[in-house]
Image 1: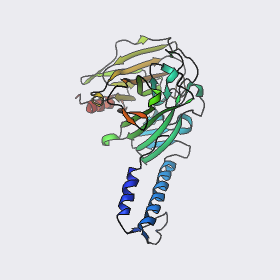
Image 2: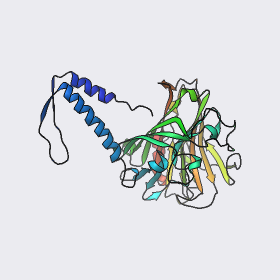
Image 3: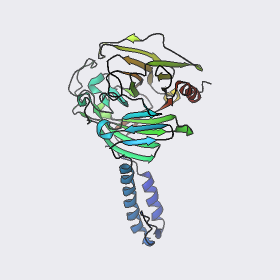
Image 4: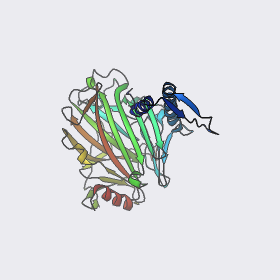
Length: 368
């Protein structure tokens, strides 16, 4: 488990050390207890205990009564279900319309990585493993959560291997002998903020991936974020200048790890996925300036259609978008800390109707 920074605690302790006496007002639900005058040593102990208690309360209070963690504002409701999908987002609702498909542990709105070209045979995945199927439990582990407000949340997930000790059609190099357990030594720290920049329809997601240096030798393919939406979200658009256009063609990619009825296309510019009425849509923006001077390649905004049957959040049919970025370990954008390789990215989502999502996406990208 990666250590949580206590730099704030250290600052407070240093401040306490500079005073000979320190007055603390204890306030609990109900009424304040009498004022106590403590020595600096006593104050340090009490302050540390209160900070620990505060952290625990933040974690406990972030869970709703049904075991979920929920964020909400006037427009959006976003939820996670740690027992079932660890830190992956299992639900995004706008005007009470559900966007996210949760048929199995490979869906949701989540992140994953692939190591050194091993594909699904070294493929840490945020929501869980293929072995989890459509069960209510996940192999991934939510190791930390802290809810700062109704609109901001930090979570850390220890990701499961997607296909542990089992070859799939997407294991191009066979099994990786470095993969020893179903639970990987790859972590994801994620901050979710809804209502970014005072706009209730914008979600900012900050992602920091951390992998043991001994588990990576050449490159990491990041699926920074992917959103598996319900089957009715089958209309795709890409931003060209200030307009949105539909892709000319989706290519049949059935086979090679994809089920029959799978189609794909891509764009180098931000995209929108919507239903046919245009009443509900999601826009995706990955700013490219964060990759300047990095030894990596953005794979584009990739769009998929899967004609698999069923409908709704628990149906097998789904359509998705994906952001992939492949980076060589020689890149100066990797940070090495205490034996881990770390890499941070930011992604923005816009949720609403097609017209408003288009406009807000233009505002974000400066394409007006």
